[in-house]
Image (tube, rainbow, N blue to C red; front, side, top):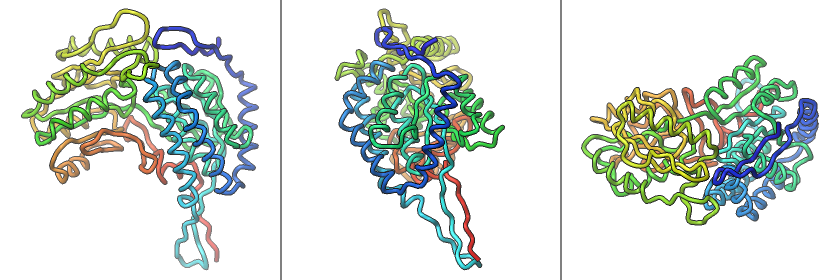
Length: 454
């Protein structure tokens, strides 16, 4: 059966894509490996020229890519253009910085000379989700290709058009034929690719069950694996937070990409003295966000990417209400076409409720009162996930101290969590392991090799 691209704003079938067959996957892996053997001998200057051209294409055609994202997974076009621009940034960043990051590191020991060099591993398989259909790929592809590797992309089935567009960008940018390839397959076929003898390493962004499966397969063959999985990011609002700016920042984080982001704020843990004031302002801001056609310029919240995702989110909301959470806004399945779901606020959420224990992948916020900062940290850590977190307080020293107690890969103070090419990105616990971006990310898929000269 072909892969289908369905517009989530109206349910219309956009296009069907025939799946690659097993023998085709083998040929793609062979071609990627052959391209790698020559690419690894190229200079950083040559690699950078290709990556800079990819950045130029991303900027020049950002509106085109934004429409494609809107049609395939419902991202508002303004956010889609911003995503394409961010992809161009990460390309320019690694084009400029990769040579410095991977320069031989000389270490004085008892040898005549000794140093560490960073050699590429080979073909890296990237298994990526639909929610940031360009950014997720470019943030791992830019450093991986600059390090001298090849990449095979297995994207989510509903954004196959985006996946092919990304392959076109790399090809037109001058990268060797076959160095970056998109494969159109379902998840089970991706498992076979993990086990392919010419695949040297795997990076996956997705759910914890998918990460566990891929990590198990890669581990059985002793292959390097980087995992960026789910998140239930806690945002701590202390009694001394600025109640003008903090609610706005929290709402921005909760509703980015229509709430479909691993690092979107999920659980808002508010110190009791300011809980009621925060809730009032938060609900007002959530209510005023514009929901509508993702192709319209003024839209702030589009549809969810698929109808089944909307049904699951609504189940989580209803379950939480049945468990004692209070519905303050939204929470009703809208009539009409499209996988739309209204901005929704649940208050008085506690551990044991669905909205606390599970990741809410959509525009639903869980508000949680806490007696003091000790309880706030305990509630923040009472989750199997550990991707991002934020703290809002006018006392920066106190916020920094609390940041050290929170179990997550990222803690932002007086700002919502976001990824930046200059900073490492990743999680702990069931949010995965390994890091993307910065010099840490580019070194995930290299052989850190010691050279000792007597």
